[in-house]
Every structure is written in structure tokens, then in C-alpha cells.
Image (cartoon, rainbow, N blue to C red; front, side, top):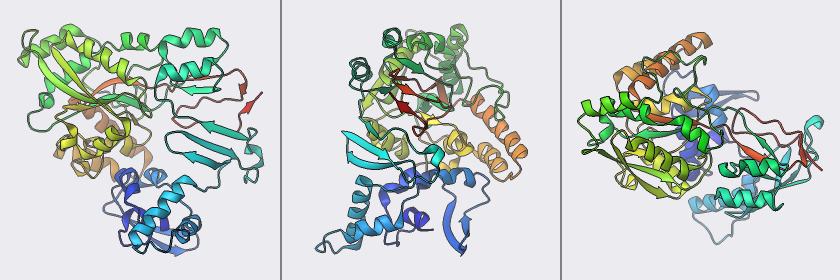
Amino acid sequence: MWNVRKVLDQQAPHFDASQVGVTASRMPTLRSARKIDNLTVELTTSEPDSFLPLNLTNLFMASPAHWDAKLKAVPAGVTDPAERAKQAWTAFAADASGTGPFRMARFVPRERLEIVANKAYWDPKRTPKIDRVVMLPMPEANARTAALLSGQVDWIEAPAPDAMPQIRQRGFTVYSNAQPHVWPWQLSFAEGSPWLDKRVRQAANLCVDRAGLQQLLGGMMAIPKGTVPPGHPWWGNPGFDIRYDVPAAQKLMQEAGFSAQRPVRVKVQISASGSGQMQPLPMNEFVQQSLKQCFFDVQFDVIEWNTLFTNWRRGAKDPTANGAHAINVSFAAMDPFFAMVRFTSTKTFPPVSNNWGYFGNAEFDKLIADARTAFDDRQRDAALAKLHARIVEEAPFVWIAHDVGPRAMSAKVKNVVQPRSWFIDIAPMTIE
């Protein structure tokens, strides 16, 4: 209840506006929580929502007792309740508490996070063998790779693709695994957008040389056929086949009135680095060149990752979009809302959630409602398959890659299990 109120109840003494965007936008139907008894909580939603039990994983749990301690430490001279709460949350972020296998020991924004083993962890089988883990932000792939090769660090995420052979030759291990993570361009449907013509959207999806991009990345990506792959319960067998077919793309573009002499100009807002963004600059530049053969003149607006992520919630019509017709923000596709609903519902237009491009209509709202009100797993999967098929056919994205989460580690690091998700378990690891 306390954690629900911190993002939904503006009158709560611990309300934190800074957490609303990354929580409430991911479960927009949740309205309130009420205690029934010591083991039961009643959650109220704005409509029937079978997705909510999955989305609740995004309600990040904070300790009320720890927050209260931080609030009491705010100087007495700060009398405004909202300001006191804000300062308490700032202090909380610098000294978070939890019951996991590791505890925060030191946090310096944009410099380092240090965590130490929680020797009192409740599960003895998963008590960490490593005493301390130091995490350093290194946005640039070559800098990360150099740090690994020089022995400065034992583990890096997303190593430089052209350094993969050298990394392996030097005895490091490269881990990767297919995961539900989409790397797309999300398209704008605002007035005047070149993507309003479905032929242009489908042509772009037919003109990306994904196999060539995969080679550029040293094999460290999967080639998408949609948001989920064929064989997935939500696949749905779309009528449009995402593939590399330049003649078919050029034909669609010519039908839409474009040619080499009259290309369509599109502007894409991207980042130079960022969480889950893979290798955004070389990847976007490759796509730019790939699309040129199909009469696309692509320009980039390169901004800092956190700014891009904030703009993603503000939408294509906001001044922060800077006239962009598409945005490049990767996303997880582990649950129905994250994978599809937040991008295709008229109820998730900014600032509610991440429908940056304002895509949606009555047909999609009905498909979403059919899935959201299906509380039987098989019925819900069948409804989601219909939704996914229509999303692929209407192409509100240019699907470019699925991440495989490449990471390179020193041979000293043992007991590594590469997951099929963004989240990796450090607890069982050892280091020699």
C-alpha cells in the first residue's frame, strides 16, 4: 500500500513525482491499494486488467522504515513537507535498502556503484561468494573494451563488435543469448509525418539489411520478424513479412510518390549510448545507408540517453521531439503491456505511457480490450496473437534488431549463467 501511494497519491507524505514516470506509466490502470488483512491487499483498477499481476513487477518496492529514517535526517530548517520528502528520496537513492543477496555500499552518480555481499541473506544456497562488486559507467564501447583488455575490469557489457576476435584470442569469454528485447525505430503518426503512409512504413521494413547489420555487430544480434519471433504464443502469423527485399521496397516507395530524385526526408532522435541501446551510433548509421537505396534521406538528432528516455514519454508532438519523425529507444518485450499495448493503445498516448508516435485506433483498442479482459492464459495468448499480427501488418515500427545481451568476462569469473533477459544473477558467481 505504501509503495502504491508513493506514485499514485499526490497527498501522501511520501509521494515522489520522480518515480511516477517509470512506474505509473507501466501500469496505467492501477488506481489504489487497500489492506484487507495482514496477508491480503485489494488493488483497484480503472478497468478489468489481466495484465496487472505481470506489470506489478514494475512497482519498485522501497522500505518505509528506511525512508522514514532518511526523512528524520532532513535538516529541521527545511519545513515544507514536499521538499522534506524530496530530500528524503534523494538520500534514499544514495543509500538504498533491500533484502537481496547484495547491499549498496557506495554510490557516486555517474561514477560508480559498489555493492557488498549480504552474508545474512535468507537463502544460504545463494549467499554471494564474491565480497564486493564495483560497477563503473563507461558509455563508449571502445573505452569499455580497452578497460577489459588492460585488466582494469573483469566484465563489460556490450563490447565493441570489431574487438570480438581480439577479446576471445586474449582468453576472455563472450556470453550472449536471445532475449525479448526489441531495437526499433518507433514511428510518428503526428500530422505531417512521412510515416502516415503505410507503404512508406512497410518499405522501410523491407529495406533494412539486417543480415549485414548482424555481420557488422560480429553476430551479436538476432534478426526480427516482429516484436516477438515466429513460434511465440503471441506470433499470430502476420500477413506482412518483414525481410530484406529492396525491389519490393522501391516499388512501394514509387507508389507513394518517392524516387532517387525525390527522396522522403525523415528525422530520427537517437542516443550515442545508453541502457539496452546496443551500439546505437554505428547501428543507426548502417540503417541510414541501407535505407538510402530505397529513397529515404535520414537525418539524426543525437542527444544524451536520459534526455532521450524522458522525451520518449513526452511524445512526438512535444517540442522536445525537435521535429523528429521517429525515435530509437529499445524496449523489453517480456509481458503484453511492455511488448505491445503501451505502443498501440489510444489510452497510452503521452504523457500516460510510451505511445510516443500516437499510433492507435478503435480496431486496436478493441484487440487490446479482448486481451486485457481475458483471464484464461490460452484465451489471452490467442487475443495477443491477433494483436501482434495486426501490429506487424500496420508497421508502427521499423523492426531492426533483437538484442542478445553480449557481455565479455575475464576467465577468472566462474559460474556465469547467461540469461534470456536483461537480468543476470551475480550471487552464484565466483572470481579466482
